[in-house]
Length: 261
Image (cartoon, rainbow, N blue to C red; front, top):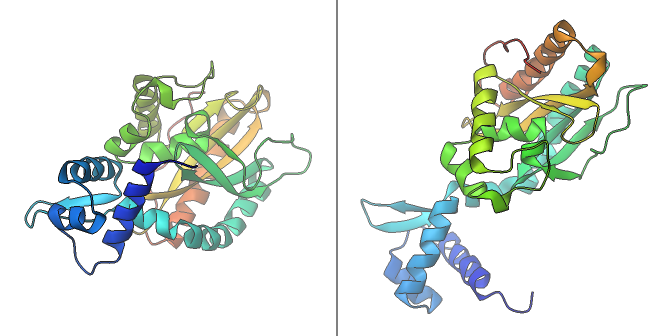
């Protein structure tokens, strides 16, 4: 882009903080950027809200936030993650006879990093490197439900953050209700939001810090699986995600409840 001064200033601010051994006061940040204090405080406010900068009230200083760490380590994390998860996803396909995949959250989308196909099952729009809007997918809903509420609110502050789709949430309130349901059931589902006639169930895997790092999901023909079969598939997906969580350093979570859709 030929002219994006706000973005350039934000990146310069993050680069400045990254080069310091300790957090900085706003006055030093302003001096380092050659910017007015009012401009610096506005930039800091946005970056704090998004999690890229953290404010330390005791020292009245600013340092890099968790989101900056996640962004910087995302590439190196995804490659080992795919290597660890691929055998688990492959075994899930062998156990269930349905397509399965692993996705990570990338902004408001999910990015598919592992895709395993079951013989004779429908062709999917998902593949490695494909992005889809997170609120439309079981993987995305599982990941969003495991995020802090404040972070979800920052990602989807208003209706303009959503992709137009008659089957998916279109407002923060609708998304919040979906995520409450996901947390209650212990897994996420979607029915026809991505492809008509296909449904998916997904469950998040956590890293050592309890942050949702990826979601395991399975996609199937909705008409093929009744209640008991869906419950069995859901248990298999949850077991695969929990096994990935254990490999990443955390104990597994509770048994899923009966699927409602």
